[in-house]
Length: 259
Image (cartoon, rainbow, N blue to C red; front, side, top):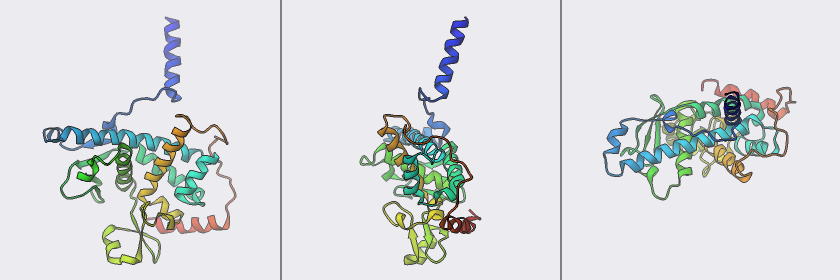
């Protein structure tokens, strides 16, 4: 009996340190409204499966994102964080970690997985509900691309990120406001004006978290499903020296106090 208890204790410890991946339950991360009704429609099972698989992959991506954000002193992690949140990311590292954890641990309310009102995906900023369109289920979309979409929408719904920023003061604005401003705004999409964003904007930009997850997963896979071995792995200390540029970024944080 003592031997069995020892084996059980060892096994639970093995699980706890992540040596054996614990299966992700998609129901913990997405709630598909009227799921049973969707299953009765032509192609409904495939669409439901697409969403659930995307939810699993999205959670995995955010798990790896949290690992990267928690150990910024590791050279590879540092490079990823600089690429996503720019060189002054340490001034907002606590916010980055909080946002990553919120997306990772949150649950999306998906009202419609095949909405005729949206092409790809959209989030109602007031209700925090998500709508997925036909393009989300396109045969040309990979599981990882769908996961990226869920991360993007989750950052809107759970964290309050934006896709656009005003050129005048750098503040995040709605899509409707961006259409009014036209050339007076920048789009934070990775394929758009992502490189033009500063650190504050990057932290509150939806595509930043999709990109972070993609890079974190790529790094994880490169090392054979293990965190990178080289470099320091301890969480960064908070008594680091702050440069003049970082002080300016900290001052600019006030622009986002209402988010």
